[in-house]
Image 1 (tube, one colour):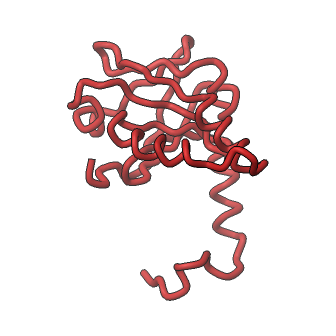
Image 2 (cartoon, rainbow, N blue to C red):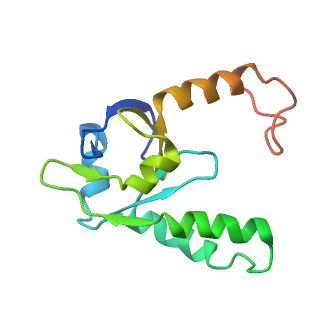
Length: 149
């Protein structure tokens, strides 16, 4: 994918829990004719990967230490919600009820590009988290001390 996914798009889930991949990202996500991968993120959103981009992430998760409590829960979360979904002819994918519940996805959502994958956020949760992050202040995260726009 080469870091192709950027931007934030408002999307709508239909009554069956399907979402349509936005046209501007459809070709990049569907070109390989392989399933897409959905899973849960600990921050309360869902993640959407092209299968080829998910495979190295999955291999790394498999190395998480079994006897470390937090690592085990992350592994349970990421693998437990992992779904391989095939888009239909209209470019729609079905988000399972369990994953929709985890991410609080009901109707209106935000699809936020993160380079090699997307985050799917409930619109209300996204707005609250974004507002909190922008007003939080404090020192920059490690490795960003010299970052400037």
